[in-house]
Length: 325
Image (cartoon, rainbow, N blue to C red; front, top):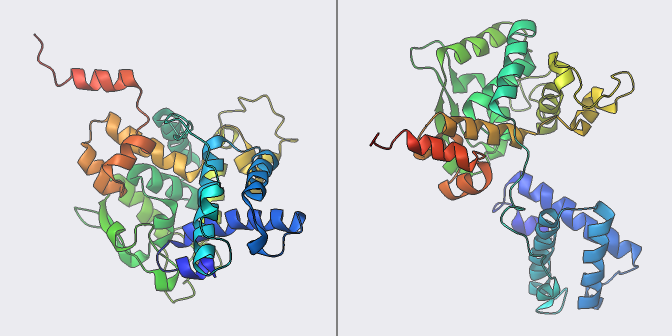
């Protein structure tokens, strides 16, 4: 009932996240033989908080996010008389410092360029090449890349670009819905790689709605998890000729398997690629307003979660705008 109520006001990814988080609460209730939410007490919620932290070995920022979802769920439950009014206030949220709220992983520019150079030489215009190349140079979310159709791409013009369109009724929503719709400029070099992929290894298939995705698998439009796995795979150092910095034997390393690539300490997530791309743009002195519009991220969120420049890097960039005297 809660998920159905949120449907339409929250993105599909948010709903999936809430389903997973509340699922953990349901799992705990089953273990504790709690079958009626009217019986829940503040003591029960504290016990769940401790269980969830220890069961998942969670960071405080992750635990806070999961408990915030539980509070939202309990607020809904109170509105339908499923729990006592005010029970949500019994869920105590851990205090998280500003530094803890920001992820400390990111794909830095040097690694990204090494990965792209390897793919350009050995896997030119492959699906992996197109995925990481597009994400790195546009900073878009992986869901936006998945949503692209051939008709959204204008590649053979003097001003190449791709259009992002929110199409939730056809399983390709954008995170910020209509507000996330925009044109994203491409360089002629990037456009040429995409065109070579389209004319070469791209699977010539349609999705369930008869649309022609830009990035495809033999079955049609890839799932988000397929794209995520591809990013984890290609950001492993051993996958791009750099050797293993963790002294692992490739024959015994689980991370060499496609669905376990995320277990490599050096692999990076789509979010890491996005934050790295945003930081790289800022280091090139691209104005914040341009980065915000291009990457579909507010200035506040950009500064808090995506700008990974060091304080000294920011100082050196400011220096360039100061008079010599």
